[in-house]
Length: 133
Image: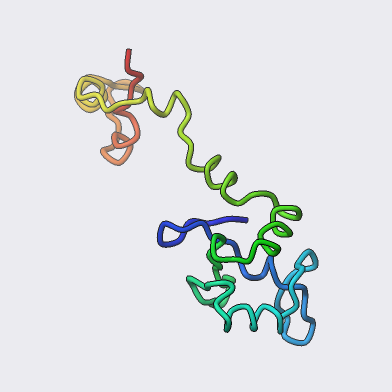
């Protein structure tokens, strides 16, 4: 799984590291031994942008990885750049939605339901949207 960190495409170190039962790191689909990962990190063949914290693996800058490691990663998990592009791409509908003062005024002043109830202010933040023509 890819993630953007400091405007860089990153992958989780756990996805790279083959499962090490003694240290309880890595995953079954990992393909780099823990010792090899540590050597690559020391030799700057991979750059870790965020160290691991409890509950979250370290983030490795995808572009700094060696070509053979990138190729193997893409074979197993798919291209992380394509995954990020798919996540960040807006749909046509999202581009067409704009803020409308008229819609906000209608729902905050004129709109009533169940007799004479008005929408609470916290609900109005989600409503003033409409499609541009």
